[in-house]
Structure formats: C-alpha cells, structure tokens
Length: 593
Image 1 (cartoon, rainbow, N blue to C red):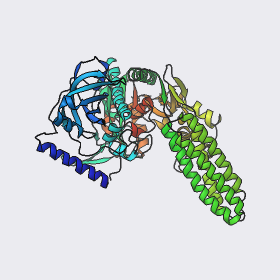
Image 2 (image 1 turned 180 degrees about the vertical axis):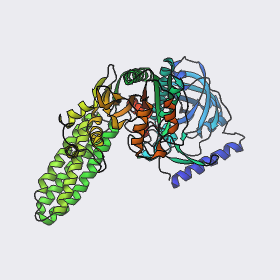
Image 3 (image 1 turned 90 degrees about the horizontal axis):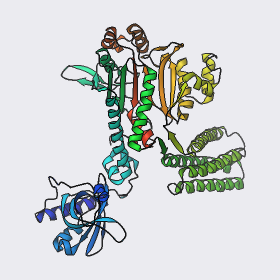
Image 4 (image 1 turned 45 degrees about the horizontal axis):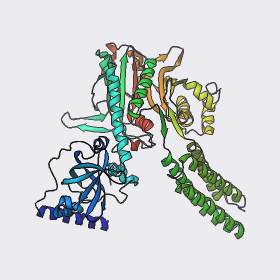
C-alpha cells in the first residue's frame, strides 16, 4: 500500500509539472482517424495515421523510445525519436506513465523485427492516469480485484474484454434473429405488485409516490402473455430478473433473460426456434458450431482442493499414528504423503504448460495413490479411535469427489451444436440413471434410493421433488451435448399444458447444454380455469400471491402459444467457454467492502 501511495504521489507531481508548463493533460476531445487494428490491417509504408489509446508498455532506448498503445480493437507499437520530436517534446514523452491515454500522429513503417509501427511526428496527452496499473499488468489474476474492479480486469486481460465484446454481439444477433422472424420487442415492468411467472424469492422495495410496496420481477412471463391476449402474436423481451436467492457458479441474483412467445405455436415450435437461434448466433459470432471449452481454471481449482484435503488428512493421521502405531509407521506415512503432495504441486505447476486434460490425468493418478495411502495407514491405527476414523471416512469421501471431478476434467470438453439436437423424455432419462422401475416403486422407496444415489433430499420434499433432485444431481450435469428434455411432471410447471399422451406430464422441454439448463420452453396454458387451479395450488392457499389481473386477462381469451425463456448469462457461458456466471457478467453481485 505504501508503494502504491508513493507512486500516486509521483504521478500527481508529474501532473503539477505538466500544468506548470501550460499543458492540460485532460483533453475534452481527440478524434482518431481509425482504430489500432484498422491501421495494422490497412498497412502501407509511409501512410499517415492518427491513433489514440492507453499506454500499455514502454521501452526507453536513450535517444529513441518504443511504446505500445491499445484501444478497444487491439495494440500497435509507436516509435519516438528525439531528433524528430525535439528535446522538450521528447523529454515529455519519456516521462509518460503506463496507463496514460495519448493521441499520436505519424507514418506507418515496419521495424527490422517485422513489427508494424507508427513513426511518431507529434502527440498529445489525453488523460493522465494518477494510479499505477496492477502489479501484474499483463494478466491480472486476483479474482477479487477482477470482479470488484472489472475495469482493471479489462485493461490487464484483453481476452476478458473479448468475452464481453462477444457477449454484446450474441445479444445483438439474438435480436436480429427474432426481428427477422417477425417478433416484436417490448419492455414490461420491473417493479410488480405481485411477483409471478416463477417460484422464487423476490426482492422487495417501496414506492414512495404510490405509498405501497413492490417487488422486483422474478420473470418476464405474465406481462408478455397479456400482450398475446392483446393481439401481439410474436413478442419478446430481453431484460433483467431479480431473485433473492443463492450465489453459485451458475447463479447470480441479478441476471438477464430472454423470453419469447409465439401465438398458434407449441413447445415443438419453440424447440425449433431455440435450436435455430442458437446455431445462428454461434455461426455469426464464433464462426463455428463446434465449441471447445478451456477447463484449465476448473482443473487448477480441483488440484488445489486435493492439496488442501491431503494436508488436512496428513496432519490428523500423522498425529494419531504417532500415538497408536510405531514411529517408523508414522515416518513412512509422512514421507509417502509428502511425495503425493509434491506430485500434486508439480501437476499444478504444469498448468498452462501442458494440455489441461493431461495435467488432470496426472493429478488424478497421484490423488488415487494418496487415497490408497490413507486407507493403508488407517488400518494401522489401534484402539478405540472412532473420531479419527469418522474424520478419515469423511476425508475419503471428499478425496473421491475431487478424483471424480478430475476424471471428468481429464476429457476435453467439446460441444457440437450441429443440428438436429437430441430429444429425450424426462422419465426415460430418470429410468436410465435411477432404475427402470423408478416410477413403479413407492415414494418411500424412491426417497431411499435417491439418498443412495447421492441426491440431496430435503425432509419437506414432495415425491416429484425427489425425482427432480435425482435429475438435477445425476442427469443434468451429464448433458454436455445439446439435449431437449421433454414431458416434465405437471407439478414442476404450472403454466404449461398437459400432454395428451400422459396427463401426469406437461408439454414442456428443458434445453440442456454444457451440463446445465439453458432454456425451458412450453406449450402455454391458455385455459383460465385450469390456470387458476394450478396457480392456487402453487400459492399454497395464499390468495394475495395470485395475480388476478393476469387471470382476468386469460379469461378474455389467449390464443394457443409456445413460449421460451433463455438465460442469456448461461448461454454466453456455454458459447464463450466460461465456467462461472461471474465471468460473463461485467459487474457481478459482491458483498460491499
């Protein structure tokens, strides 16, 4: 901190020195003739260019100097000579700092090393940076800083900036796709008297002028359906939803949704729309339908977790062995555990140098050896040592979870969006994973089997929720390739129509890609009587939770329709190869410091 404060004071002193010379280093305007990338692309020896950007590197050669400037499009090298600029201007140029913005004018040329550059004839300081860039200027790695001060992340990591530029392009292409098919874009209220369209905990606010409470919307659905009633047959909205719930790799309380509805369509219509739109966006933005994900971050995190678990087990087991076994046994365990740890550390150091899948395989092998060591030495503990045995059993389970994660990550992840996408019924997928007799056994037997399969089951879960937990835990994460999961239980989706061939299910799909739901789609419920019954059941008898205006609108008649909701953030995660939702949201929600 002291070093940073010292650098800030040095920069402020430079600012005062500039002002003393009559130079104001915070200009109102500078108009570059083109971008840095355009200058490089349209290179011609001797061509005059006017460019602007932030200084990201400088190399002082005495009577000459090289700097790099970067704008949104990329970087370009600038070459300054004392005999061209004159002594005073060259001295000023030498005292520019990293992160300052400047405008430059000069002629294009190529250096002896083949670098396209600008031979500087004049320059102007556009904005003086009073704070130094982060220590790791080329590649900011501190996650806390990256999310909390995203501007530094964008400066230090050009690939991060590219992710967000592509996100913008993805949203633009979605709009273009829907507009070209006759959809009308609308905006509906973010503050609602009754939060409807989903089962989620809302954020609450107060409207001073109206003197009443409102809720931030949890879904776009009910207002868009009102527009179907009003005669807008193809309608969509891209907007923010707010759910006062958990944070995770896949969840952010504030997130962007696309919802679209088409009168006279159904869930099959919307499957075609989702597949066509996703393929269109991928081809336009990425130029391919085959997407390979870089899993290095997840592999590195898994190895670090393995090291942490090994350290904890080593400490506990070594102490117990010293008390209950021979010193030779304890010494041998310490040696073996140290070798296993060294193997994991070596694997971690290979990240970025070797293919991530190979590093994961190496780490998994070392981890399996460590698991074997713990099991071997555990049996050498004598006497009643139940607490340590329970602790080791728990550690073994965690080791196993990390090993399974590394096993999954050891295979390259490639997502192929080429049509036609797989379609599979919800019940069929559950039977494949949980047993062919799953829907024939009793609810109590289903609950018991779900526990054995590793699903997380709450005591209050209803029977259909137990099946849902099995799907979410054991099935959805395996659906890496595009899959439409159809015909879900009617209790899960009260706003959809029943399936004619199975009245216990609804005409619904969940489009799963990359191991998570990207888009649900429905044949929308347009029977106001059935809709009221299902919403009353969902509300649990609390009348104040019913949106009576929506139900009144349905009573005026809504055409049969198909509808979809696509999580834009998750779609971007899948298309852009990002493992965390925070890496596709510019300013993710964080606890204030």
